Image (cartoon, rainbow, N blue to C red; front, side, top):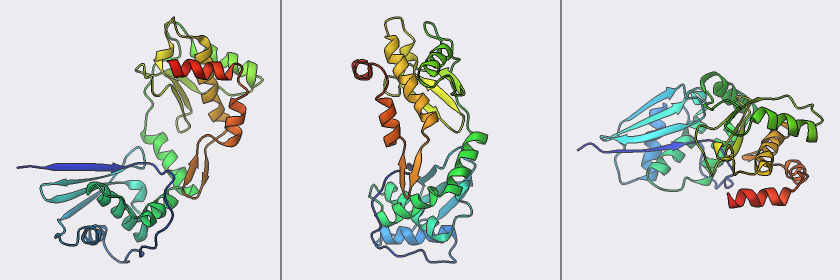
Length: 253
């Protein structure tokens, strides 16, 4: 009987500090590293064969799957030349997820510090630009034109000096992701839930204003931390007219 379990690892976030685990043994192949880590996490089990492929993903994701007694590991090619300690850290994280355990904090921190390096962030953004694509509708909706919304806010709050990025409506009427700015593709996408006659223009303006602030206040990185909404961002957001009323409209949405 064929069985299959799979897990993936995505972008870095805030994680616990180092817990004192040992560094990777050098001069191992990636497959040997995964088998060694397997024995650490499951000392009473015999490690299965391991197959590793470096894939041209559009992001920094990596995946692991146990299929018919073989570990299949698909790793972003951003890590193809990563040093052995990073390969070891990723092995602990992926295998821990596969076994439904929490990875040792030391390896989580080590991996995310590596991905959060400036050179790795730049490479990851370039990969997203080259390989990724942004699916959205045009800015002209049934009831609202996002270009008109952007330019009105630009004139009112940014002295008309903000360069307009690509703008479009989302493909679905999401009530959970109301808007987002993608710096890799310089694109603002607004949920189509706002393109309805009964939706207040104030709510739409506030969401667009929020996304415009992301152009002015880029993400800040420090260690393993990634701060999307900085203090400056939050302070300027509160200057939006009828700020509390707008937030209440979104809450009731």
